[in-house]
Image 1 (tube, rainbow, N blue to C red):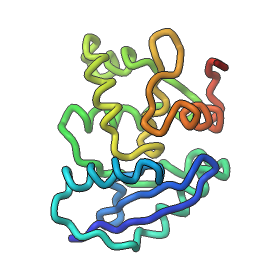
Image 2: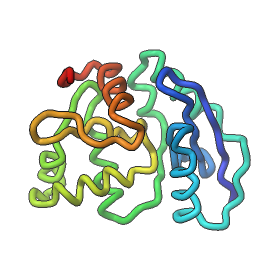
Image 3: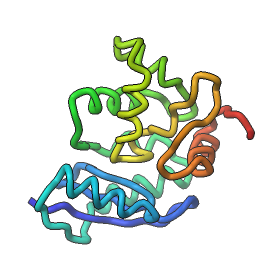
Length: 168
C-alpha cells in the first residue's frame, strides 16, 4: 500500500500530511517536513509516497482554520505508535477545543497518575499534530510548554480555539 501525501496553506504556515487510504497517519508543518519524513521512514518503512492525499482531509483542515473547530472531529487519525502512545493520543482527542489540560491531569485520566513524564513523552511523539491536539496540554503551572511547531503556533492554535491562556 502507498502513503498519499498532501499539503495545505494555513495562517500559521504550510501543513504537510500523509494518509493511508482515508486515514491520516502523519501531519506536521512544512518546516517540520524532515521530522515527518523520519517518522514515516520509521513507522511505515518501504512504503511508496505519492502526492494524492484525500481531498476530504485538506477540506476539513481548511474548515478548522476558517473557524469550524469541529471539522477535525471527522478526520480519522490512525497513527502508528506503542499501545501507551495510542492511549495518550486517543485521550488528547477527548479534550474539547477551547480547553487545556495539564500533563498530570491527562495521566490521571488514563489511570496512571504518576506517569505525567511518560504522557509528556508520548505527547511529544504525536505524529498527527493539530488533529490529535497535543497543543492542548500545558504545564502544571498553567504555562505553555514545548510544542514541535513552536510556542507561537501553539499559542495561536489555543487562541483560535478560544482557550484562555497565559499572555507571556
